[in-house]
Image 1 (cartoon, rainbow, N blue to C red):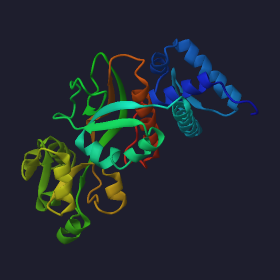
Image 2: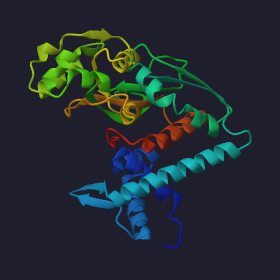
Image 3: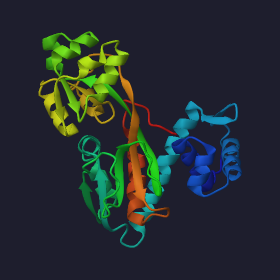
Length: 302
């Protein structure tokens, strides 16, 4: 291939990869479905390799298509950032983000300096909500929620599906010799807000769910992880935001069983497109950063 594909076709591919269907990509780009389908077919012809598998009436990205779409997402993000940084003073102003405590402390805060590098003139305010699905605070520009994504009248994008799995410190696992699911009761269960997650896990482990209603109930995920790291018990952990703690060996999975949460992390922006320049810059940066994580769970394209 000698010529660069059209930017519109690349945007169609990025949107399809992110959202998972032609009709959602069409809505995202404010185009007709036939226009998006045509652009995707033309892009595949121009590239000379298969981007898609046809499964009935649906399109699915091939492994090569997924890799190329990731490259395109980063390239488009770089173009957006480059334009912002070179347009006069660049992106400037104030941005208030409401983010769930666990996502903020374990994922966003360790990476937020990278956003400051590309948008140094943005004054950032990061707050945490009282409820993980709250999108009602009027002074907030964008929300990162843990919810079912049902927020009518707002722009909603799924950031990450969530898998819950038992986590504890290696010291606790070794001291107690945890090997079977029933051993979790000996470790001391730790809960966030309710017993629901452990009860669901006990059911798939063929244990009586009522036995999960023991242990300590915390009101904040950071408290749960602090106690977990200090070998005070075993927690039902979010494998996405705990990825780095697991990779470094601070937390371990004593059992293979996990459960898929019915909720996900969503980016929610009040109002309808187009959003302001600062919100768009942060959204593009966030989407560019997420694929760089070696995911403990797969990012959703639905």
